Image (tube, rainbow, N blue to C red):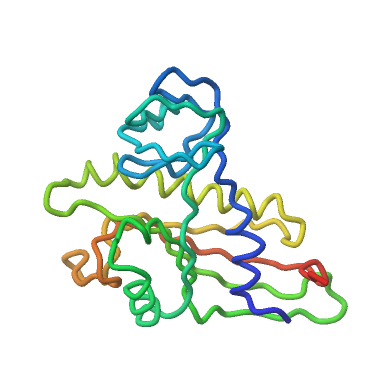
Length: 224
């Protein structure tokens, strides 16, 4: 039985498409079918690996505005970093990645341990894994209000969650998932009756908490 960490990384996260489907490009304005997790302050790249800074995103019109004329014919997003472990483990490892915060966001965190239920020989299902994942990006605490968090961060994270779900649906090693549960966390922190208090990760982050039961077919994850 393969480690669930490897399955989540190889069969879901590594298969999340970074490429945006372009409808039109007019100087700095790129119109796409779905902006996915593009957001202001991040970068897109063209097929020649040239970077362009995003200065505006319209999630209704599906447009991305960059800081200079886009000269390519293909658009790619930055891949999210994958982390896994307990809160203490991930906080430590995330801090050691680099001191430059923009280089380690956004990230997808698989919280461990994950409960797994093995099935018997008569079943086509090998096991069901109870997964909890946190999709996170930063936020400007000193100047942003709640509306800014939702305008500039939440939608991009929700789009990333949808891409994650899309990969699961399209991957034949997984049986159809029907019980997604998700919650927007304006602040990734511990909660009290008064709201969020201490940060879980040593940074100011906005997140989407996704929980699901992932059924995995027998023999389908063999990579021999």
